[in-house]
Image (cartoon, rainbow over all chains, first blue to last red; front, side):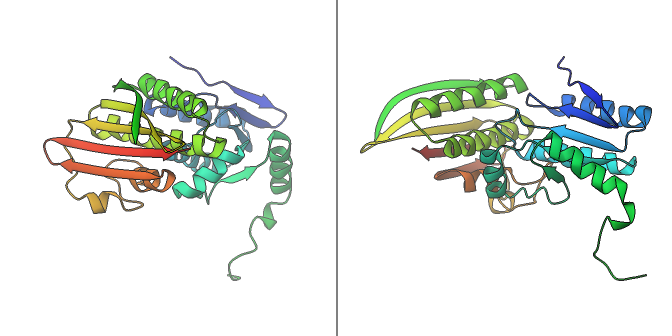
Length: 130
Length: 134
């Protein structure tokens, strides 16, 4: 069975998705990622999809799930490496990936994570005072 | 319109979907589709292939190369003998899903390609035909 490796780079976890996933692989990936986040106490996760020349709605859902699960475990996820043609197609498909944070590449993704983890109070400027 | 070439693919597993995506990409490149058109087509193919697998119990995909004047086109006909779709209009609405999906597969595919035709009969199966021109 396919195996998607998860690496620790500095204080973040990095997962590189290079193949299409099905239900089984998606579940395995989600399992492994959540376990690793807990085990390594990671506060940030970078999901590198720069190898993917196609992202369909199923993959979009997988990315959304991973982001949500990570958040529940106290980690922020950032998707990096969306190809231009993929970005164009995703918008036409109707997949805005609204709740998913993105960055151009791993480097910018790490900058984004460091910035947001460094100042937790400034996460959101929306909403009225309690 | 002239039919130049065709091939029938059987779709029953994720591996078949991956092969179909690659075949579609290869044919699109050979026919001179630009990168955006290639990506849109392969994405639509992925959506419809997954639908066929998850809801239709697998099926066949007929790939045809078309030619109109000087333009080349690729047509893929997805046919399954699954349960069929009761309300096609509803199924085409964004966000509607009978499974665990995002409900974007049918409507989304239609937006990505040049021509889209769907027919379905409950208890008999579903057919979705998409065409992308160069």
